[in-house]
Length: 228
Image 1 (cartoon, rainbow, N blue to C red):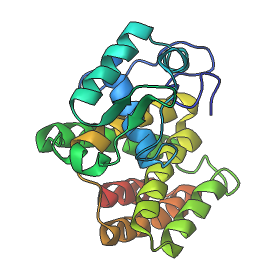
Image 2: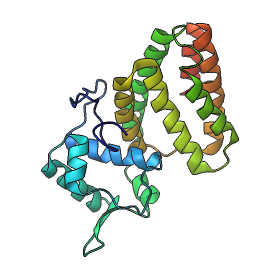
Image 3: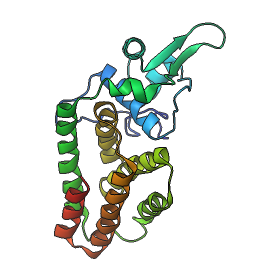
Image 4: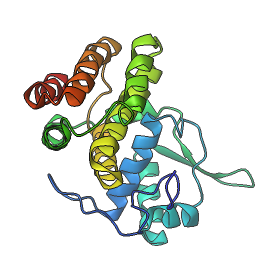
């Protein structure tokens, strides 16, 4: 959790990070993608109650009206449920995965994924040979967790976390937040990867970490491309 809270997409300075690439998100789109990302990370689960509008607005650095409209739109789309009464509020739909499938867009996903690939290749090329074992220890642990995990949901969660942590290890907090924006959008635009695919991709994770510490730039970039 950063200074702006669990859902906050900003650095500790409180300034929004400009998102390069295929179209910056509006405030409402940012709310959608951040909720989708946290569902993928299992920090918010189907059926969970979301924070109140004012809390979300403060955490995201967005106006309450924008957040309210975004949540209303997600309720209309079936991604969220609005409940009234003392125990009411806004909840992640219990049928999140099925409802989200109706919003998949292969062309849009390809555009975002292509930019994420360029971003990671650039980070890897820049950091190759400049990172040590200690900086990559957390990423190695995630790769080990992926190798040892059988649960499909856990596999997808750790795979997503690997890319967030990779961006931070190689490019700092700002690059983590840009990557979070891209991954959140992808969560709504394409189906989650199958377990066998994630396990094959994890072989690329392992190769990437080896090549990074060796300073083998071409091999490290190739590992990123093979993963994608």
